[in-house]
Length: 206
Image (cartoon, rainbow, N blue to C red; front, side, top):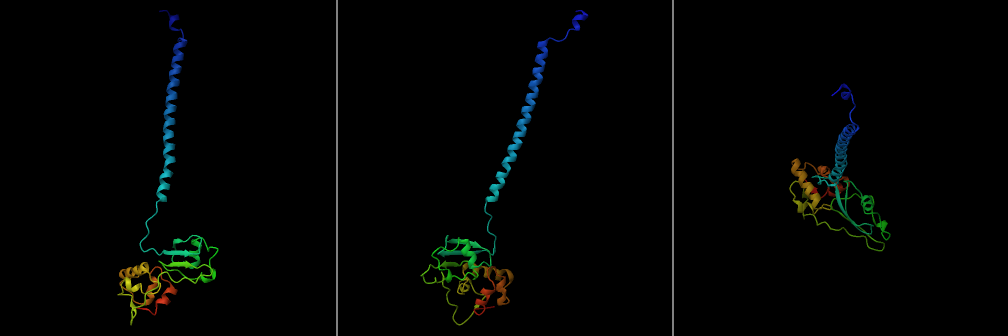
């Protein structure tokens, strides 16, 4: 082989194949990067879905919650059971039920009255007699007052506006705090306010 032969440039076909090989490697690298980025984006897009599902799961009701369960019936737009905050009034329950129906006797409802847990709130229609309480309280024990420190649930429920839920709270508070030292301690029981305390004051003792 002569010196002239060694100086000849590579054949065009070999150079073309080399460029094609380099291009193929570059394409493969870009494709791999695209797949990696795509997987990362897909995982990121899926994460919020999991969080939303978790957030939509109802949390368990807290023990000792002061929420009021009130059954609104009669002449309201959407009768039913509603959960209201402690201290809520009749006007709040009517609003939760969608407001008065057209035939409601609005003058027969005391919108300012405070509500009790477990209460049924019937709304009369025009021309109807004002509805009686859904559950009439049983008379207090003859010849004595109800002892807050010894009465069982059935005895507590003989008091006006005391239902099973509120009787249970009174007993739970008594057990957790070593008993009542005065009638005013009832104010510490969730669901009992000043108005209700005054209605019970002459019917209970400690």
